[in-house]
Image (spheres, helix red, strand yellow):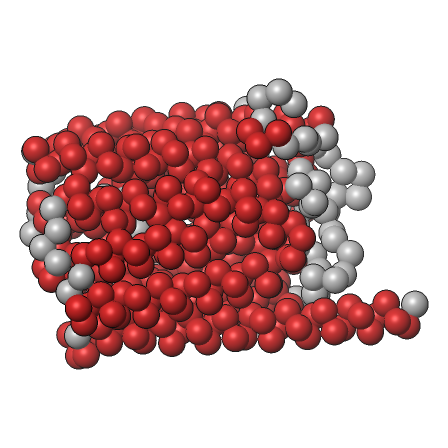
Length: 433
């Protein structure tokens, strides 16, 4: 289709979906390019201590704990309406940023977009599962995400420059991000979901479920999904280890770049919020193709290996107090996170309704698996940021980065071992046929 970047051809329904996904990715890039400055704003403008930065990371991810509930409760509602309502709940509250200088209120308002995402992501993966063929899903997502990254790069750098001139500019930048975020979800809500004859009839079975019953059933969903799908359970275990390492570095990096490197807003934004997205913009389509061909396990493993290198580069930058090395580390980070972004968003679809990646798919299960995946982000948000701050106080910046490198390396090893076992089992099954 003529509007597709990178000359990528898609079947009719995939092209139709990509049309809206691409147009949603652009305002989403504007939104998150601004929002990602929240840690620097909290530290540099509002004078927050490391403990408050850890609270920011925890509270802005805790809404993901509700993802299984939203997945089950909203399955009895029209997905288009549910996505619009999620956008209204999550993004207009950013207007409050125009009237507050309180770090605590700032954190609670910053958590609202994630509340919207906790409801939106399972619905979005349900759309992707139905509307994209498995062989093109990664490339389509990568191309759309890369386009959004271009907007995110510009938004982050311009916002950083504006805040160098006026530290209180976040008062109007964040409301702009809220408007862009809502428009992005409104655009996705326009997509019609393709139906399958053998789709899992979960909606029809729970049309009369109330909130309390949905809460109980969502808790049961998490337990049964992890119990009955050992491949997915091990995949999530490895992702959990990576996530601990990633989240523990978030408050440590902010303290390092502001207090040790004494970087200006524009420099901090360039290193953390511009260099990685530029690299991601280039790498996302490549990683999408890797996911389509190699699968979620190997793609995750390669990304975790690159994150190990990133953490060790940060360790060296802390030893040398080198801003240049810090910039290089974040180029590696951008390469790694483009892979993580692809797998984090789409990897769970590969396991939906399967005990292992080699089994036959069960249509209609992608939303439930994604809800478990996102819920576990909330679980690790309860402990990882505090662990990072504790490591910072006990061992210092450089050793906190070294601990993170060890976690990434462990996740890489376990993911590749799981991939090897799955491939061995698939070869054995093929030989028996």
